[in-house]
Image (cartoon, rainbow over all chains, first blue to last red):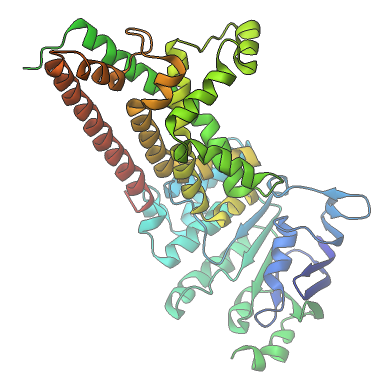
Length: 228
Length: 231
């Protein structure tokens, strides 16, 4: 279980969020500029909260009271970014292997084969990211995050840079991932239809605050003014 | 076609050795300073930047003289290095390498710094979330992505070292077989009667080395660039 209760000042915007996420896929839902991506970065350790506490299962990742701040490379949180962020100088296979190397995990060919199969990226393994389509890139990015055996998977608008057809191409993989991989997911998006397919719980974020936390019905509540 | 005398060979080999050693020793320092200037904010940053670039704008003779009074036998740094590590610079080829390294350093730092600044920092964040410590991020993401700039810097530094004249001759003089580089040898030959032929041969060699270095760097840079844009 992920427990987040943090405050962070970003320019003249103040983020103060408090929520919990359990197994399944929790949506961080809200309009653009609500601070959703910053929440993801705080959890990943890429930015530090001013104060508060972040805990994943029985590990404290950040606690201003006891001065705990686990650096991002020790958090074991898989992060799929909007732009993929694949390493351009490495082949797809080496991109996929990167997390395993860095975490000192043993070679696991069957696990690699399973993830490659799940995401249908077998034909891409020898290529470099520069030659991939946007959808292919995101699938590889998902595989890369998954293969580091994360304790939590963060998705920050992973489909936002794709057109409608590519979105439809990736969505089934994300649903499969949620059902098969058993890794809790935190999914940032402002796109309600996408979240309806993926999310099992919803945290509604508005103006740097948690406006509501609950089930998928929250997606309809805010959807009208957010689809603009 | 190009019959070189043993003396000329000595000058060529010495030049290559000095330039290679100067470039190789400058590289780790160059990467470190470029990284500091590109990525860190600290007190005295402008001063460091200025110091690094000074040899580029100072008359080489001044740089050579400053090296002489600081790294010479009686200079504070020179005396310390000679007494503690037995490293002597004055009137040795090592001194020529030091002078060449100092003169090439700003070119090396500039090229590496520019390529470091052009790197997408978000890739480094991605590497960190995948479990790479800061040192691993640098070794597996930052440095490989900066490689074209590093290569360009190495070539510029090497070329500068190979052609360096003013600082070297001021610091370690012009001793055949020890500190007489290609440039110094050409200069000497042009000052003795009948030295035109020898000077001409060395000029051809200098042009050949420069061309090979340029072509090699172009090839490396293209290969490195190609890796980022597909196979």
